[in-house]
Length: 296
Image 1 (cartoon, rainbow, N blue to C red):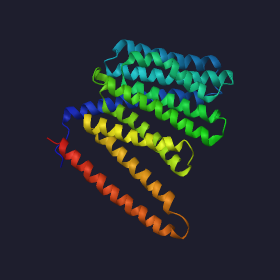
Image 2: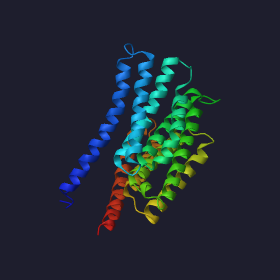
Image 3: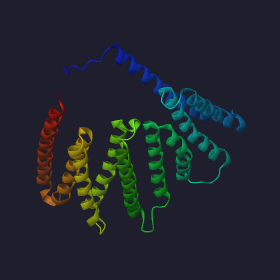
Image 4: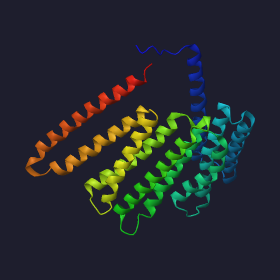
């Protein structure tokens, strides 16, 4: 109906990439599961030898095909994943006593040179995921002086700042480097930034504290920045749709916090449902209008 049926060449390209990336990820996962399943049968030396050999083969493949070939990028991605497996194997074998967050922090640090030279968005996103996991695990070990609740808020602020700065750097660098212009990576960073600031807004609504006076204005600034970047300067319906969903969630939470109390809870739920439907209609029509504007 849309008139965008792929031709035979497009299908071959899609299947080639699908088999390449799924095969690369399956190979990396297979190495991890093979060692875990045969842990008691494999000695210390065979475990390290197997993972190290696979890393060397993957790096050799990257050197062979180069950074511009999809096969070379897949090899470097496999090497980066197996690097984490090697660190986990070292910690499990020698029982160093390090916390889990240190594994991911060291993984991100050791992977950083490959990420910088790889010129590959997928590898950057893997690094971002590892870094985010390290932050989350760090605050599970060190929640803060005032307990878990304050620790969760600090964690969310750090994740929001980290991912938002990464998104800003990505968008600034995109006009200058062709490999950064892939939109899926920017959208993934925008989603991470939006999810964390939305969670902070919800925390401010339901657990009001002095810091909440900063959270809600920061949320408004984030919405304004998203509108300016992805509506005025460039058009990205995915990010705008996520922002609209965030607004619906926050407004519904504000209404729930004020209206769902005592005997008037039923009426409060009705008003919340009406508000969600109204906002969905308004945002849906706005997004449809933007989509029509993009059509030639």
